[in-house]
Length: 170
Ligand SMILES: [Cu+2]
Image 1: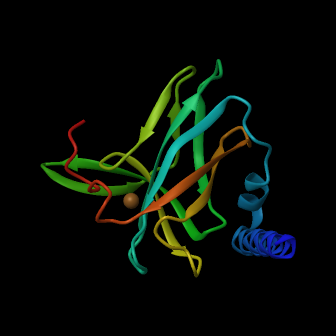
Image 2: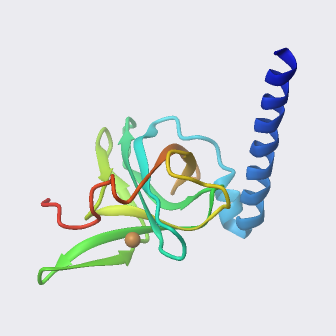
């Protein structure tokens, strides 16, 4: 019994280490230094979930950012040890047509919160690591302009069980 427990723990440690190695492999240059920044003491993320699509289709990531600080917080990038590429996106409606575009930065007002949700701001995740399944959790590191980071833990959901990307009223 004890032996079985120990070996399961060893397996988890092994997985955690290989995850870190993947993150280092993908992160490079300035992005790597930003990703290694300290955790924000004022900004947190909650309710993160990912609409997990089979590659090469990109998956959408959604969460709520809370800014408990007295200054606006500016999100400038996102990284994940579980995905090779993560981008900040915004879905907008133009003449009744839904379209996605890259976002350079997103501000969360002091004391406020911002919803990243279908039909609005979201992260786009590509190149999921092998072995990532519906029901698993993926880590998402949100990078703020001041160099600090916010860790979100995201549940992977089936595209069937999750609400659609577009069509939600604002
Ligand atoms: Cu997108």
